[in-house]
Every structure is written in C-alpha cells, then in structure tokens.
Amino acid sequence: MVVALRMKTPPKSSLPAPLYVDSDVKLLAAVALMQREPALALDTESNSLHAYQERVCLIQVSTGKEDYIIDPLAIRDLRPIGALLDDPHIEKVFHAAEYDLMCLRRDYGFQVSNLFDTMIAARVCGFKETGLGSLVRQFFDVTMDKSHQRDDWGRRPLARSSLIYAQMDTHFLLPLRDHLAAALQQSAREEEALEWFREASQLPPARSRQYDGNHSFWRLALPNQLTPEQSAVLKAVYNVRENLARKRDVPPFKVISDQALVAIARAMPTHMSELRRLHGVPQSYIDRFGDALLAAVREGLASASPTPPLPDPPADPLVVERYTALREWRKAKAAQRAVEADVIVSKDALWSLAEIMPESLENLGEVRGFGPWRRAAYGEEILGVLRRWAKPR
Image (cartoon, rainbow, N blue to C red; front, side, top):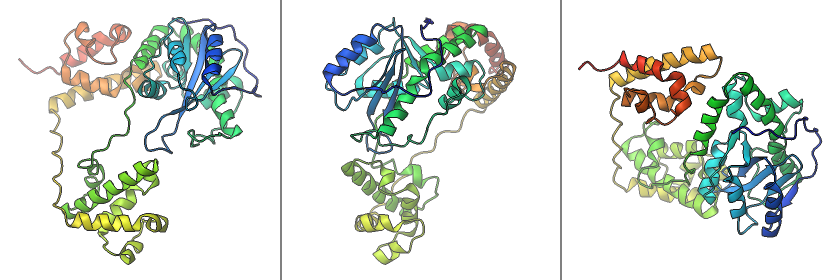
C-alpha cells in the first residue's frame, strides 16, 4: 500500500546531528517515537570486508523529523526494532533493500513488511542511473560522499565522518520515495513495483561464510587448470589460510590473496628462498605466514591427489533453445518498455520457465518471480513462446 508522507520539501544539504542509539533504554525511547510515523527510511552497514563472519554493525533510521543511528553491537535486545520492521501499518523505505533484508534475517530473524524500495521503483520507471547517489544528485542537487564504503563498521568508536556517511544513506530516502511514488503512479507501474517489493521482502536469510575443507579449494584449482599434485598443495595452503582467517577474525583475502595461493600451488616451494622468489606473493605475506605456508606445501606434496568434483551435466539442448527464445522475447519487451531486461523477468526465472515448461497461467505461478501482476502482464506471451518449443508428443 502506497503511503502519503507529510514531508514533501527536499532536505537541506547540511545535515542535523543524528541521534546515536547505543543502549536498550535509548532504543525503547526511539522506537516509541518511530511507531508514530507513517513511514521510516532504513539502511544497514555490515563488516564483510573486515571480519571472518560478517554481521550487521549499524542500523540507520530516518523519519521526517530525525535521523537515528542504532548500534546493534551495544544493544542487548533488538526485538523492538524487529516489531517495528514487521508492522504492516508503517512503510519501510530502503534503497536496494535485498542484501540489507537478507542480513537482518540472518542475524536477527527480522521480517520486513510494507516495503518500498527506491532502487526498484527507479528501475521499474526506466531511470538509467538508479544508484542512491545518482538519484539524490538528480532530485536534490546534493553530492553524496561515498569514500567510506569500505570502512570497518564493527570498529568502535566510529569516526564522525563515518557516521555522517551512514546518516546520508537514509536522510534523503523519504522525499526520494515521494518523487518515485509519483513517477510510478504517472506511468501506471504501481502494481508492478508492489509485486517487486513483496518478492524482495520474502528473500531467504543471507548465508554465513560456508567452508568445506575438502571441496572449497576447487573453485581456484579447476579454473586455473592445476595438476593433481598442484591441487593437493592448493588444498593444503587453502585450508591454512582459512584457519588463520578464522583465528584472526578477518576475511581470508586479508591473510593471503587467491592469486598468491595459486602461485604457491603452481610452484610448490619447499624452502623459504623458493617462496621468496615467487612472483605474485608479497613479501609481507611471506614474513607473516611463510612458515605455515611451507608446512602446508609439504603436507600437500605428501597427500594423495584429491578427486575433482564431477562436472555439471550438459544442459538439455531443447531447454537452451527455449531459454534463448525467452531471452529474445525479454530483450524486445525491455526495449519496448525502455527498461533493463531483468526488470521484465529475471534470468533465473527464464531458466526455470525453460526447464519446467508451464502450460497455463496457473502453472506460471509455480515459478519464483511470477506473481499475479507479471502473470497478467506477460503470461500469455510467455506461454506462446514456450509452445513453439514444446517437445513433439
């Protein structure tokens, strides 16, 4: 349901100081005020570039009156925020909500109801530039500082400049939402956008870092065409990197890069002098982890060669032909609508259609991404494309 907001004038480029919420008492007081609002703008910041297992480290919320920065690392009970997010009477406005929602579900089990996603709305309307910075510049003539995108959001205290960056990500969202809601209404695309919003709200939780010591290394060994002996060495050094990263609570790439692991696996050095001569392995890595890496190389050389995973079976040629025909239909429809192709239907949905071969509008509803609006708008055309590629009976 589209909610009319009271705030219609563009915000000023100079921001008021945000309210920093870092205790359970402050959170309860903030939520009590937020519950009175018809809509809230939200964003999150996570520390994926700085921790072995990422987590949500900030939750930003803006109303028409205040900007809040909530510190989930300092608050014991975040359930008041969860109840607020699930309240169907309050519209929650995000920009590019998908990963924020998946992380909130992973870390806290939160479900978001009554979503409005400004990036989705802009894409449905056919905007060419749909990043938040581009839209804010277009509508409010304000340039957003994006220099803090790689900040360590788990560090405390956060620099004031980092907090301002976080505040900016929600400060403009409510008036931006109004502009885009008007554009959706003018182009008669409200129902299409609402279907996108509902689908985004139902995404599964983000996955925590997955690691399998017997299989994960193949993602490097296979594309780099390593020999069985080199693959055994790669498996050993890959596992050492993973263990070091877990102990240091950093992403594996901060221990040693993928490229350096492959270089070590190819050369299979057994002495420090050989390791130091390798191109692509920085001396800083060798100084810190050289002994552990050499021990892993020797372990790999003494191990049996690992058995590579079976390749995926080749795709059914008829399925590929159906997919190609559907993709051409989507390309033409997107050009007609002047939108990106995946606004019409996603690539994954096209593959599902080609494999399942639905024979009715009802069957189309079994494919993820085909809600009532999309079935009504495109269903008969899609079924027509598929019928031309049905197997002869």
